[in-house]
Image 1 (cartoon, rainbow, N blue to C red):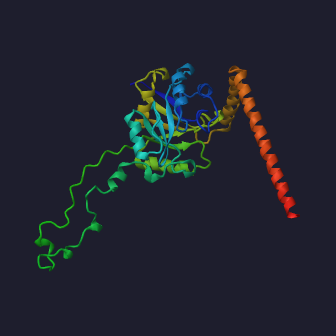
Image 2 (image 1 turned 30 degrees about the vertical axis):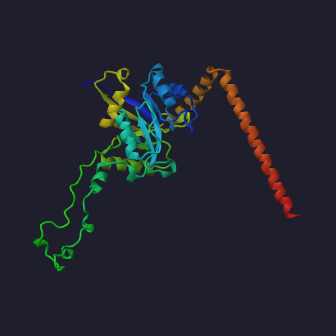
Image 3 (image 1 turned 90 degrees about the vertical axis):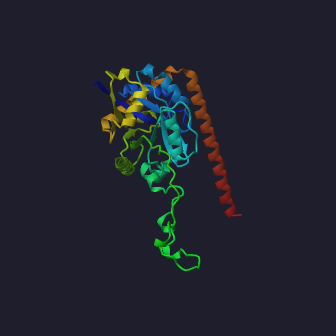
Length: 324
């Protein structure tokens, strides 16, 4: 059977995100130039720019895949391959189920890193967690009364053998199926140390989850610093690969993690290439966008100067008050 390998960065932020900086067409251009086959725009709690990126990805020779990084009640979650924004603030397991019902895959980003809203281990839905929970109506061993406490009509203790049933639990109701996540982000290029990545790899290995790598880029030069290679069955070339093929490969776990400790020459290539492409992009998009940027920069400068002046006056008044 024919097969092909594709490289994808499944976690990238654009200017559509509150903390992103780059337009999606510039990100797509950069991704194609550095050899990626797909990049998923996963802005925080907004999906508009990601859908637009998926629509125009083919113009850059890339596979178009929409996605979003949704804020759940228990931490961030990547919804890949969905066309709508998942409900915010819902429990992790419920959000995973919502993604699956719409044909997407759910990936845990930067797990266990609470400073970046990573989910805690206990909130990641796994079959083991469901099995540990007692069935509704069942009586726990610690809750059952000892046989000596069972009495007859005269109030005297009755042996357990003299009665038909002692503390018989109610029939256990069949539990609902657990909607597990589809993959764990085991290498996030934005983590400052390798500890959380190593812990994520151990968790994925323990529970049999596929591992993915992603740049979590918020600036152009970081796009592709970490990426995932997927083996796609039944395709002769990358040009025949669809978004559904990529989602299926993630579910099957045919993933290879790449991007650990990028070599200096690779990092230099990313920085230099990103700088030149950014300059060329803004030159092409015309003076209007540049004028708006200049105006915004000037306004920010005036605001900063005003704040500095007010702080200086405040400090001077405080010093003078000491001698009054």
